Length: 167
Image (cartoon, rainbow, N blue to C red; front, side, top):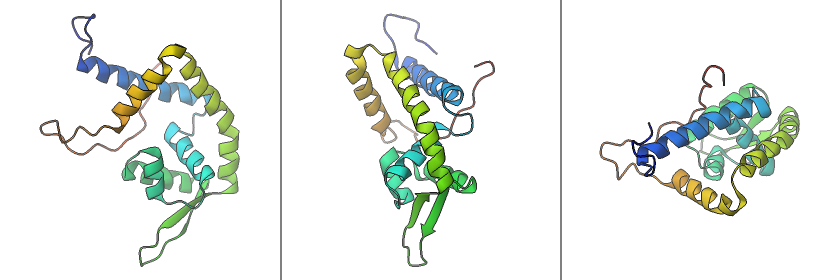
């Protein structure tokens, strides 16, 4: 919902652009990297490959994602036999996460395409603007506005978006 005055972008323009960025990158990811492994799933595989034995809480911290998002992704990856939960106890010992051999192979297979995809995205931003754009996006990604917006609730679960027809 762009603002009426195109010379003065408004807050809703930002919301629209963020929605488009998320949807377009998710849809392009499916074509360029994998139709079966979402960006979130890939980032979980990457994080666990880099630090095997970490917990779901570690993943939440590393990826800046909610426990429900990480929990759902971990469950889906365990079901696909590419991620394994180990340990845990009735006394509250954390469950550690490791990639199965198939999970490591999947990560190794997708990593080059994911890197190329990320490089292609970055290449679209003029070099002199990249640092500023990344800093602005990090600020948006890490700001919790729920306490400043009347009636706002905690952030909703982060889910992958569906592609629109013909995308």
